[in-house]
Image (cartoon, rainbow, N blue to C red; front, side, top):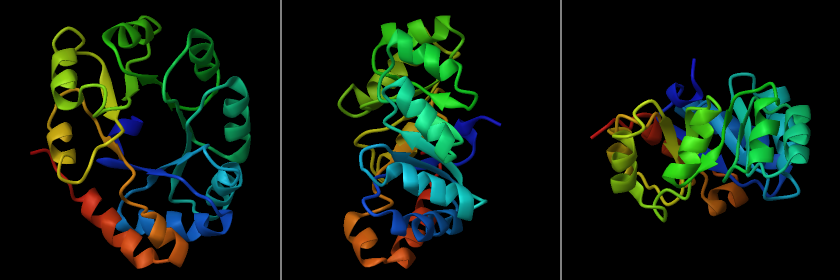
Length: 205
């Protein structure tokens, strides 16, 4: 099954302390969101991915902010089951294709989408979604590029997510609102689980 079809929302998570990774992942999974993207923006990211991969078997753990082939190899070695990049250069596309795990390469323009589609890559991350044109832009892409599907990420909120999910070329959205920094700092996993459950219940509007 496609990554885009596993859940309506993919939590995009920044983890500062690897000790929080497992309880955080368990809370997200308990709420109904098994697909989790841990961004490689902190020193704790790879260890966090490894801990989740080892201790939360129901989580489909992935690595985000993939920028280089070294990021790919380190993430897969840590246990990442999928990879997400903010954008895609030709060399990164080559490396992702050979990674051996599913991936969502980032694209923000029609030309970038077409370049990836020429490679046979037709499931992409649309980033930064709101800044790059949001709903109207994705609607416009659906006409000439009906065979490409997206996980838009960047600036999407619970109030706008259903509108994105209603688009025929959107399979899921990425969301950063599910793991508030203060909830992670205080270990408020009940709050994370509640936010996860609300997001898992989102439907196209």
